[in-house]
Image (cartoon, rainbow, N blue to C red):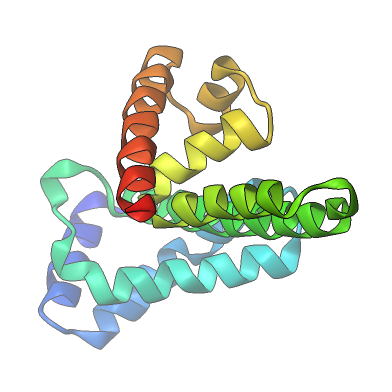
Amino acid sequence: MEADLEIIAVRSAQRGDEDAWRSLFGWHFESVYRYCLSLCSGKKEMAEEITQQVFTTAAGRISRFKLRQGTFRAWLMGIARNRFMKVRSKELRQRGHEKQYSAGAGQSAEAKGSNLFVYEVLAELPANYRSVLESKYLEGLTVNQIAEVSQNTPKAVESLLARARDKFAQVHGQMQD
């Protein structure tokens, strides 16, 4: 597919041309699905769900796409990564809640409430902050591992972690009041 043809299709889709949108969908569906499948470690059902969410989100936000900021495919892949991180964060929270209650027999009611409160604070954070905090503190990943997974530099991850911890503290304080 030629870049010029894609640019024309994007501009047409942004003006509401359904045929142009169908063309973009057809050109990019397979690569987005394969990317989602790799993110989901081969879990086909999850990859299909995320792929569907990617195209639904892209259709609703196509007017926000700016050609000068990158390719349409890169934009779709960014949406896919964000959707995957959101799904993964939700699964981690659910697993955390399940572990908390299954192992909760030995915990005091105060400790159970404290753990639940942490998950509630995490749920209030922006997805990128929640994801990096969960990766670091719930999954136990190192900064380098998080950088590799998120395709960022370790310095970028450290910076994001610092901002995420600050935001966590702010939200935690607001929710306690």
